[in-house]
Image 1: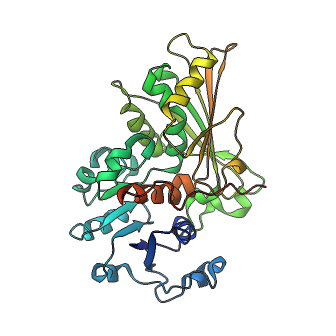
Image 2 (image 1 turned 45 degrees about the horizontal axis):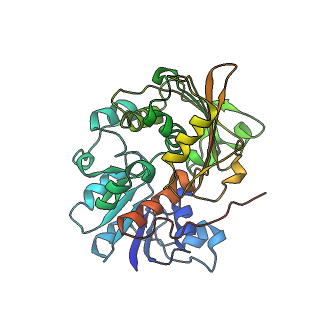
Length: 343
């Protein structure tokens, strides 16, 4: 059994980790932490876990003396780096769900996150945790930087076309929408019920921090740097991301050739499901799936891709467990074979 700890267990991603790990046959959740709610039972914070996960919440400072194999850091950006540094001398595998080690360098991080990075050595060790691009590297590392939710949907929607050089790299537009859980558990004016309900709005225009994450990962699939126009939107629902992606072909292409490129790219990736019709959020709700639909519009000479994920599963906690499975040499689907919740 993999002796596991979760730092920051009371947020949305932390509680989703608990929900999924509870059914994982090879993990033993030894400790869950919260600095603000130390001493309380986890089920007091999230009553859905009553008589299921009634563990007492500990301080993360106690973890250094525990015999753990793996730790999930379900912490905000700028906080995770402190714990990665604290645990650097321990024999631990770490999956960091924040953005602290997702980018190529501390300089890029500081430019887009507007924070100083206090553990720059971590960039040399971290592997970007998208198995569809970096499965072999994930198997060998002790530090995984779990991808962002918007980048997961966007990168998986675009990767086959970038890899095969099928599109004009300057033409990419990503129009993405997310539920409110992507903003975290803490109350904010922008995610207050009266602002979100019966409403729909864009945010983070031109310089949303996920833009550079998408660009860096896609640029790694070919020699030239990729630039994307990424615009996120907030939907009046709790979970899910749907990205509609537009691009102009870089060469003459037909529908059959386009679909074959996606089938070839994802044939060995169990959590990407290619669809014959455009997916909806409820098709993937509660699952670690990314549903992808691609088509070519001859009238406008434009490729359209629809990509749908559950932002708390494939966009966060599910991907983290998929990475854990790979790091420990397990079947990457272990604990994640769920069917979507519909309706």
